[in-house]
Length: 103
Image (cartoon, rainbow, N blue to C red; front, side, top):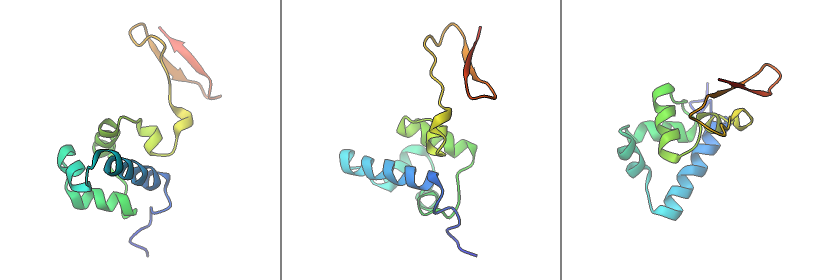
């Protein structure tokens, strides 16, 4: 069994793209990012190569750090919701994929 069983998962590609951009445009290394997030560099490397996928806590940390949604990281960008006024209610996706407003 391969130790990179998730290497083809959209998460790995998206994470690699984000890490590349952070390095290219901000000069950040994987160690810098791992330290900023409070995780081990080895953990971030395992995510990057597809050895494992993050749990909920680290997935949220990654999304917050890079300013993207967890759905984006997981390759589910079609499920992102936009709320035109976040203080008046929430959105909910229906079974058909349409959004409906919940007061």
